[in-house]
Image (cartoon, rainbow, N blue to C red; front, top):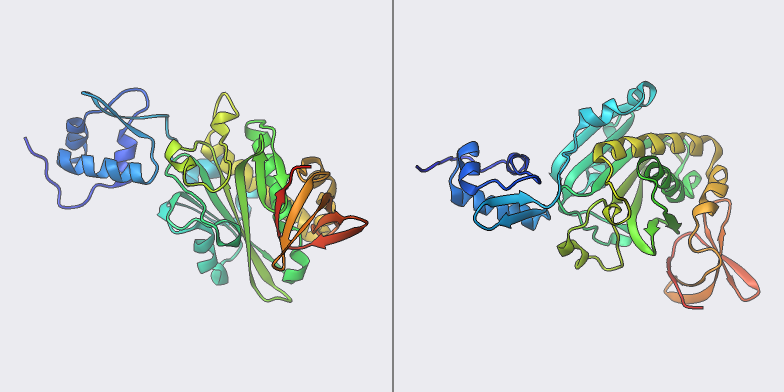
Length: 330
């Protein structure tokens, strides 16, 4: 018997039909979805290209390397307290998108309040300084939050560090992993990158303005993705016996970000100085700072009241608002 369908297979429907507990044959998938076995095979290959953990079980079909929990807006909302839920003007979950940050920036002018965007995978995920953020399907968390500020952009100094503190707190809430912060926007565990933060500003320089805070957290990194990342990386699955629910982690991250941004708006970065210092991985280390086209070696000495990095170069101390920093051997 042949199964035909003029419309292409919905990749999310195919992924939902797969299981980590047992293999599902191509014939069974074809019957369930009303397509040919060849169409199933073609879409399976597409899912693998996107990073989905689909394995072929010889003679029995396809199975997932681990159980996938789809992101769901309703599931995330119900995990938020009533007050936080009421603050959200929008919470959208996309199957595939260019970038969650870009999506929120597109609609920023019309945003009526706090907006959140998540995606199962990104085709053009971005890190700091235009670097590509690897976004394999279904295993990680890609989340952006937009918030308006009445003050101008100059008053938002240190915002990426505040977001870092919120990410650390959310991870502690959900899985208790031991992580630290590498100025200005990296979350590390065991010396490897676990999460990244990208803050983008828009609006009027003197205010009002808005900030889009993008967070990518590695929950499960497929082996194929590791090879495409240009620095040592790690995932929560390597750190915890049990990987937390993605929807639960998304809810805690939203709650922690909103709480931190409210405090930041009224008190500035100074209110987060002690919290950041507790997680500061650079302080006391020999570092090389790349700024203004030159390299400067010194010893990191924490951050100032604006969140700028302090580096001691001999007897003098320099403050860097934006720079590339690498840890050097003593």
